[in-house]
Length: 201
Image 1 (spheres, rainbow, N blue to C red):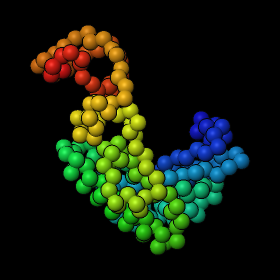
Image 2 (image 1 turned 45 degrees about the vertical axis):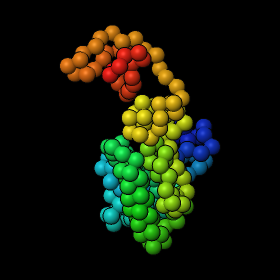
Image 3 (image 1 turned 60 degrees about the vertical axis):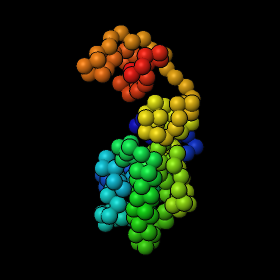
Image 4 (image 1 turned 120 degrees about the vertical axis):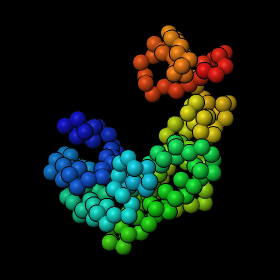
């Protein structure tokens, strides 16, 4: 019900799916006044979510999406999350190029089965910061926190310290050198950072 309410309020609202169950749920719960716009998520090596790029079952799912009532197949999307496990710009570029090659192989199989795949998108800040010629085959980029960047991107070599556009001030309430950790009063466990004026923290 909440997703249906969102889809009514917004001119364009997309969902990302990677299973037959999700297709059935969308098909069986039409959004009043418009079709669902669905992207198929493809796994090209991140090993987190998506249909595996080499599996025929993923191509079958794209066919099912295109042929299902109440659904408009928007295209494919892959997240290059494995770029966060690299240690150099060269490795980031390798992840990007491998991902695009695999995604385009999948897209070509989908198109051979008669599926219109108009949008071909990838995302991750590290890969979008290292463009290559292979990106010409894409129609869409999802660059993550490209606009602001952060210490994580700096530690990956995606940017310089001067490229970081903003910072968050928080109070450190404990320092534990054995674990190389600090405790802060900000409850966000996603926060990564450096401690101003404290070398090595």
